[in-house]
Image (cartoon, rainbow, N blue to C red; front, top):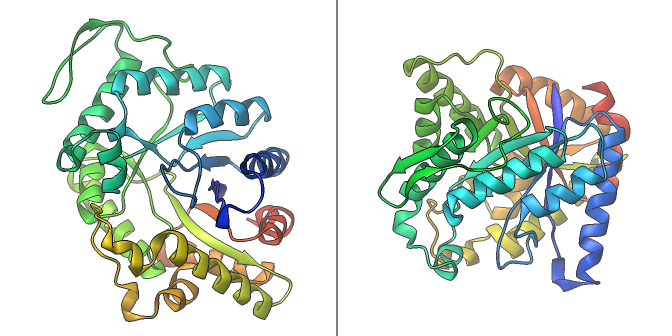
Length: 331
């Protein structure tokens, strides 16, 4: 079982200096490096205090400089918002500077506000994402790149630097929708699974992915499939549930609540399993409890949904401390 951390850069209520958000995150990353964590996965968002990190590649360079063994993951590079040659250059440079420790996670993005602000038609997002992924991988592995697509055309371009890892860093595609799962499986990509789906939904998507992967002629065995889970830990179950409930309320208020669905997105509206939104997260999404009980929950999920890589998003400082001290050493 591998364990990583999905690192958000939240600035709730704009309380305190923004630079403190990054200082605390880097302190946490240094602790991960000294412990048994496999990777930190850096979350890219734009124009929201939910997570104030518009460049995971720039932040990743600083994280690499503060660590020695921890892998530096992107969760995700919003590939449809980038010029793909610039994206290939930045990730390759990060791989060189980190000593070959990059895990490249790529995603399409979903918020119309981001696409509109960057001048990219949302209806082109899927095509641009697919082209960008193809271009990045070819730019890393071909001496000179020639490409003719619907949105990008290049002739005999030498993209430098090349990544240190050969043929390129390990690659994952964010897969929230069934269509994203199907596309990733059809190309043989491994997937990253999102922090908002219920445990049952994660299991169903994981099974679908395995079936589609086999149908496309690719092997499932040996793949790390990170499943992002919000996590609340405390010495007692009641205290952990309170952390989970506060974290769910913050998430609903800042990012995932029904009030935000008046804004256009490229995702289907969330139904919260027919429950009140906060209760849905507490019951069906967040792993919460004492360290002993959460270890038991994780063990059960190994068999139930094929969990082999837990990507944690701790909902409090104490949750992270208990995760590092009492949960990770037992997984």
